[in-house]
Image 1 (cartoon, one colour):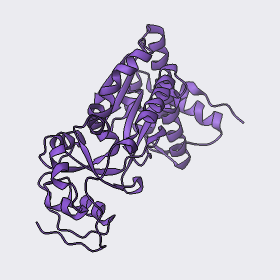
Image 2 (cartoon, one colour):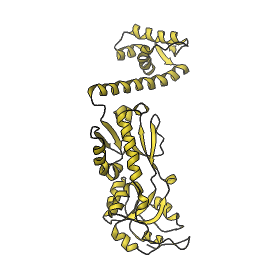
Image 3 (cartoon, one colour):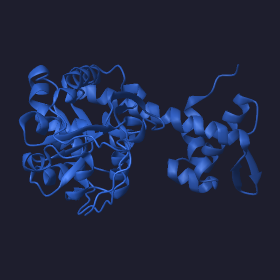
Image 4 (cartoon, helix red, strand yellow):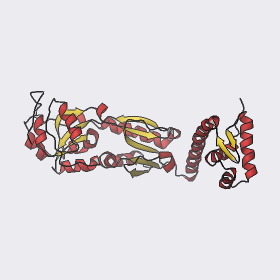
Length: 315
């Protein structure tokens, strides 16, 4: 098999995007002739053409398109390797840059940062709390704590914990509902969306009129509202865990929307970071912390299940 002349790949990558050789040469700070020679050398070494010649233009053919995709990936991996090596050389390699959802940062990660620092005092963490989907490689992040299906192209993922939705409210709400049926929750001020609440009530066979009073684009804000008795919420069990443990919230029913109708939490990271010591330490710490998160031990159900599969609630 012929060897690929790696030194020609940057020129190939630029010409593939800018088929005018003169423009490509200016981008590469090379002469027109030098760029042309590199493309010729690459094609001769491979034994087949990568471009169709159209006057002064070079247009990628099918073989060129295939090689372009591979070259883009390979050069990006090399770029990441160079950055990682530079970080090691500068002594900054142990800092972990994490992208997390604001709700996860506020309700789960922040209360546990002290335990991370005690376990790994030499590995500082830089946290970016954002709801946007961060491009880890291009933006220089080591990993992300995400919620979703676990399908993010180009990233390696590890499932951390399922995230069923449970009904929670302030102690005052639990007192009002004590001894009443599940359908009676519909008479409370509901936080969230009618569609999700309908699925939750359906777990007990209840068909009720659902009119939420507020919805939030951030689960942390919704949990704060529930703690202040603004309403009762369907919350991810993981995010409500600390508030349930210390009594700021009460779980109102044993019903839980299972993860196949919600979304799990994942650790996602570029494959080249997998064996980096700081990331290995983070993965081990997350597994240990998730194992200690045991929402099943919290008291449940100050309300009773419905007696009938068809219950109508008035509002």
